[in-house]
Length: 320
Image: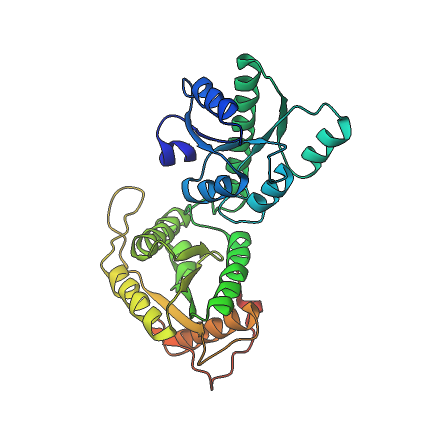
């Protein structure tokens, strides 16, 4: 599970309560089942959540100097914490208050004082629901064959990276990679061999990316990589490494014999930077796409960088 990768075998619970006695009591109670953290204010709770990425936040509804709903909003408006489930602790039995908590996005609430059995049961339920949602979301945004992101996830990530590039004035490169002659491979050797070729490219791409980079399978034979903080010239170094590396990859047939062909890719690159600004993500992707088309037109098995003076016409009809 994802949270086990982050924290070990136990989920991490963050308790945000400004009453020292209540907070310490909850930490002691929960420590038998979970890894626990405590925060004595909403602000410190948000900071801890951003830093430690808990699996669940147990949040006092009425803090001394802060409204628990305001803290919830802060968590929801931060990408690193927006998916963390929040359970409110409240001594208020007013139905409108509790309804407001749920409307704002809390997954549950527990009345003070809560029994150990009830509290743990509600936490367990919230963690199960959160894990199920994460799995469904991952499935909806993942290409089934390669395990890379799919077009839906790429579109969302490209918009995010484009906005960050504008906000912080750093370059963003888009690399479009097309596996050459996939149709011929499928027709001549079968789709099983074609899938092996696609997987070989996906694995090579994955192993060459930095942690901040993002890769997706755009279509049948086409992949897209987003490289923040890199100009097109810098991205071309990665692209060339993938192009030359793929030449050494051998594909086998179903019977284990080597396939009688080598693999190659055509690559198009464009960037959004201070020296070469783009008006939109569509324009940036079209520019990289135009460079890819040029690489194919020139004979494939090559990397082409789109320059500002070149026309980046849409090629949507050639998408898979």
